[in-house]
Length: 299
Figure 1 (cartoon, rainbow, N blue to C red):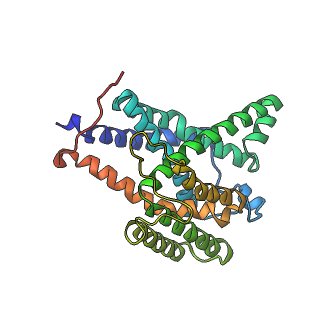
Figure 2 (tube, rainbow, N blue to C red):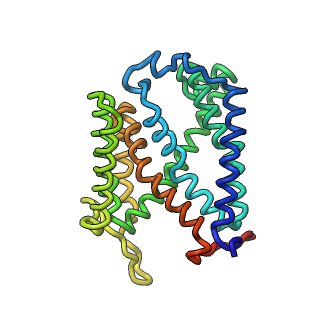
Figure 3 (cartoon, helix red, strand yellow):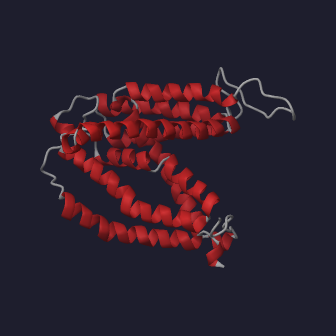
């Protein structure tokens, strides 16, 4: 039956999102924010090559898509499905995306653009006062600590199981640095730089999955559970966290065009095929015999 396969909720989700994009998003865009193409953005007004710099729409789209379609929308619904059943998780991801997620992201972005590129802290101070600013910044601090800890744990767990994935990540970082240099320093066209970046990324994925699949980076080790009653000498995830945190610190210190922007952009080209293949797999699930593995509701 269709109802016990991923086809049903995938098709419903696609129809709802398409309708929302065609109607609802245009109402919010035109009636509330009324974008004006002739109006200069802070990226052009205050271009400093660090935080303010213009980018092409394809680079911006890839960056923004990868920024919001990351671990959060994957881990959150999966965890909710295991805890509450697949229907509550499905309803949450669909309606939260429609009425909270994209509206919040899009509106926050536009408000920042209209406020000369200011971040949440200065905008909260201007619009709501100093107390609201302190509360917001405090919330953001603890939120970022929690979400980074959760994401780091998930990635460290994956790398502990598949050591070659670290080398794929390392090649992605190198490809991002090259991409940023060619796009923003050399001023090359986006198309050839993107092709080069995708090739480098494919090489990194291939190396991580084959030649270096079982080779951990220096200073780390692959954890195997000890015999019953034996306490491990050290937490293995700590070793994996060191290079991961180093990459995070590097990304926070370097100017945006050097690493973060190109890295998010080129990672899009490995994520979008995965999303398309997952969607295709869900749509053909009645033919392949794939069934939903969790109940509709779970108390």
